[in-house]
Length: 140
Image (cartoon, rainbow, N blue to C red):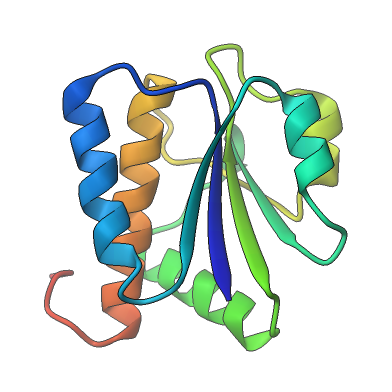
């Protein structure tokens, strides 16, 4: 399964870029990963294929513990889905059309984060999920 993270806008903060790079480099040891920046949701709608599994990060989505996220990713792999896509919207959130196309809505927290930070948080949690599934000691 290939993992794709699509996010609206570009990261401007150097420390956030470094965190995104760090966790991306760790994730690729477990699964192929592609990071893609887009200008708007219209681009996303063109990129997502009908057999992809789309998870939209949204404050009204379901919250998961790290272990639940690991189980979720494992379940998607078990369904032999070729691409798991996570989408992080811009500062104005995610539009209804894209939400309606999503297979799942995921809330990273009840708190609001800058959309740049959401990328680093999501990637860290995906990395943590990978280590949980591999039985490694990162998650304690």
